[in-house]
Image 1 (spheres, rainbow, N blue to C red):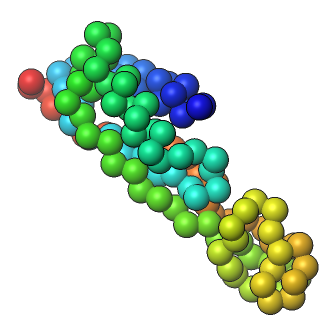
Image 2 (image 1 turned 45 degrees about the vertical axis):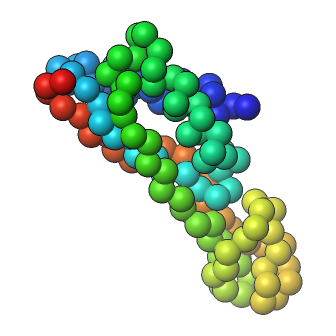
Length: 119
């Protein structure tokens, strides 16, 4: 489950940045996860719940995780039709050729986090 490693790094980065801003508490973490990113939202939530309560992660102990899902979109290089692919290797539903260019849905990134200067 690579979500554990991903979330460990996310929590570390957020806490490091929060400390540099002299925050005392992180209240919310927002992620953008594409449907084709090979990252499972439920596994991310589980990993976040594990990491946020570790002794060295005291800033995130009461934080909420919000995951925004990004729908997959592809554009056919042949006919120009935009469609929602189910996988990264895809076939255009209009011209039936395997020529789709993925333009959205592979994203995995931190959107934002909210914190407080007081506990």
